[in-house]
Image (cartoon, rainbow, N blue to C red):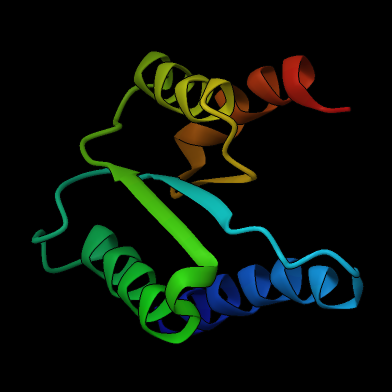
Length: 112
């Protein structure tokens, strides 16, 4: 669980570091999370939530984070992920294997 949290944090920091070389002020990165269950499940989703809180603490106003709980079925996942993409989020994280196919389906519509 710690490895996943660290990986998430490093991934987002890597995304943010690319804007450090631009001449314009870096824009706030918008990150969305499709969480499997509730943040207080004391397991998988709680670990992801702890990672989200860590990102907010470490990155402060450089990041805007939103999350959606109880994204269980593939159809729920596609709806949630598509919603974040339509709202202009820079990165969306699916937090379980059932999110993989919906993420691929949505990505086809939003990749440049």
